[in-house]
Length: 389
Image (cartoon, rainbow, N blue to C red):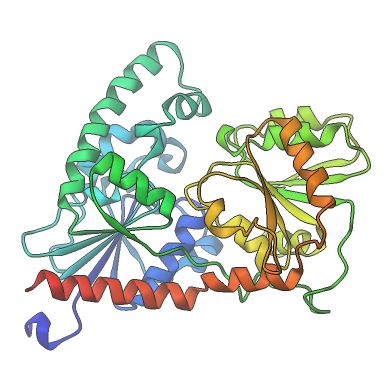
């Protein structure tokens, strides 16, 4: 094999796992598009074929976790095995290792001289700042919760230790850059994730097509920190406004119960991308109450020309323009109480001038896949060359 200075460097992409299609998986798709010859490595791969095809056609090299029965249902209860499973992923052939990390991927074993760039979606929140929510979300209580906390303590120490094996960190937002600095004591550069602006588009009739003035939409995996329950509570007492709730998850039954008896609230469950886009195109605004590390869904809504009413924390501050002006794309509220969300909707409806579909679309176009691939490729190759002296 010729030396790496005379050829395209060999790249290995390491991901936590491939279980369902979400924001992290869409970033993986673009990482693989930026490095089309890269090998792909994951702890396990149980994605549905249609979802898998939306990410990549290449096969993933997996760990022994792949052979465990029902791993797609059980993996969150097997976190203690993941450091050992990562050590079985063989990336020794690569000059460059890119880890797409939101849980454990950055802990992959690298050899001396390899350049390891970690694209960090977030330091794992179940290790650092959302343990109680994580355990409750997965029904871990009593003695099991006590044992789980001891395991999480060990994993947190391992997580901090493996940060030293990363040559360079890239993060998805300024918000995560601060967390990486605080929790790993490492500097990083921000490259915002991509939004699929070719799929999420305004209606064919034009970006300023009429909206349904009483219709609001929210869409998310229904777990506690997303605060979908607070959004439903905010709309319960405003029957002149309609709310469509899209998504599924552990809180789905609770959300349906909260919406029961309110004919103007439609809890529809999980929907495909075509239906999601159709609701964005119709809605007056998208409502978002989570403190996210980045949050791709508000950008998907804006790509369809839809303004966003969002909690003014986390990544939303980097994706939604809330200040007055022609480029305004939404409005922020200060906390996630139902009364505050309801007041924010009142203020949004009173905005003069209102955010335009054109401004929303222009904001989303700052986050294209082409931009992401170019920035990531430049960062990886510049860092690799610098590491070689």
